[in-house]
Length: 86
Image 1: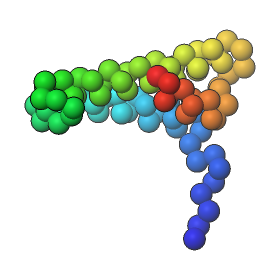
Image 2 (image 1 turned 90 degrees about the vertical axis):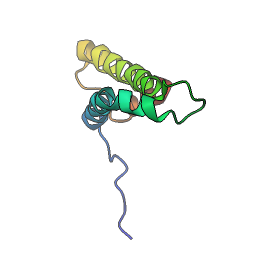
Image 3 (image 1 turned 180 degrees about the vertical axis):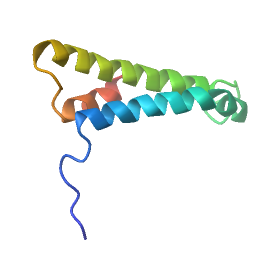
């Protein structure tokens, strides 16, 4: 079996993935709202997903902004860690 590199996603890949995810959810949020899938039938699932990912994107961008003033690009694992907190 092939070994997966330890550093599969670098900081730039995490940032890009977050941005693309946010844009995709932005385009699909009304359609997801209409599905009404979880946790109750209140029509805001897509909006809630969008707002959650938006918060994650803000956390990743804050890491990039903090490192831009100091050293340039953040270490590979740091943006990935803040996604969950965001």
